[in-house]
Image 1: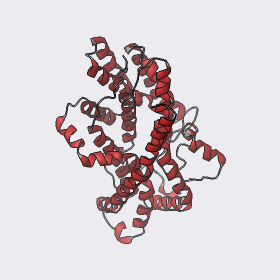
Image 2 (image 1 turned 135 degrees about the horizontal axis):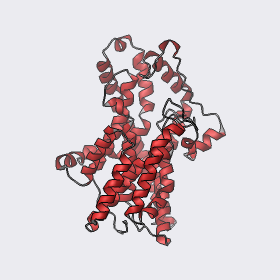
Image 3 (image 1 turned 30 degrees about the vertical axis):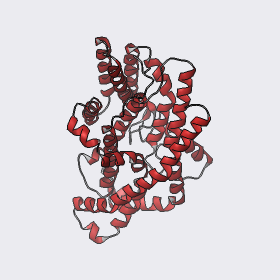
Image 4 (image 1 turned 90 degrees about the horizontal axis):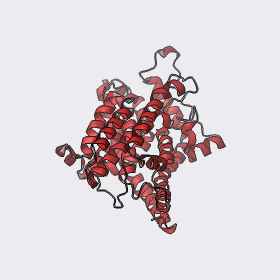
Length: 383
C-alpha cells in the first residue's frame, strides 16, 4: 500500500462544493443557535468539523507528491508539506487574532449580552445563568500558545478566543505526525488496520479521560475535542479512503487490500456519530464519482468559489455573527418575530457580509500567503 505515484492525481472537483457545504453548515448552525432557532440539521453543525477532519486526511494523502520510503526525497517532500500547510493555515488566523485583540472588550460584552437574551439550549437553570465569555488576551503564555497552535493541548485554552480555532490546533497536531503516518501506512494494509484500531480505542477513551464538552474527564477537562486523541480516527478514515482511491487508479488492489481497507475505515468510523458516518458514505461516493448528478452540481463554479473561500467562512464568520446578532436583539420588533423569522432575518443581514468578507480575506490574505509559501519553497530548493 503506497502512494508512490510521482504525478499528482486529478482534482476531485466535487469536494470544493462539499467543503463549501461544511463551512456554511457551521456558520448557519452558529447563527441559528444565536437567535434561538431550533432546527435538527443546523443543531448538528458541530459534526461538520468531524467531516472537515475526514476531508483533511483524504486531501493530505490524495495530493501527496512522492514516495513513502525514508530517503532524501521523502524528507524534502515532508519539509515542503509543512511549509505549504503553515502558509495555508497560519496567516489568516494571525490576521483574525489581531482583529479579535483590537475588538476584544466589545466582542466579550456583545456575546454575553446576547446570551442573556437568548441562552444556549443546554442551560438548565436560567435564574442562575450569568454568561462570561472570558476571552482575555493578556499574557505572554496566551500569545505563544496561539502563535504556535499549541493552545489546543492545554486544558482550558481550547476555546480562549472568539474564533472557532480549536480545530486549527487539532489540525496542526495531525500535520505534525502526518509524515510518520505515511511511513507506517507504507508498510502494508495490516499497518493501516493496526493504526485504525489504535485510533478508535483512543477516540473511545478520550472523552472519559479528557472530558466531553461540559463534562470533565478523569485526567483533564477539555471543553472541545481539541486533542488529537479525540479525532485521529476521523483523519485516518479520510487517509484510508485516499490510499484506496489512489491505488485503484494505479492498478487493481488485491482482495486482501480491499477487505482490510474497508475494515479499517469501518473501525475508524465506529466512534463517530451516525450522521457523520452517513455523510461519510456520501463523501466516499463523491470521491469515486458514484453519484454523477451530485458530482456535477458540486463541481459548478458557484460551489468552486464557495469552496475556495470556505476556510475564511469557517474561521471569520463569528466576527460577523456576534455583533450582528447583538444589534438585532436590541430591536423589539426583531424580538417579537417567530424563531424562524428571526433566523431568516439574521441570514439576510449576515450572509452578504460573511461571504463578502470571506472573499476579500481569501483574495488579500490567503492567496498572497499561499504564493509567499510557494516562493519560499522554491528559494529553499524544496519544489
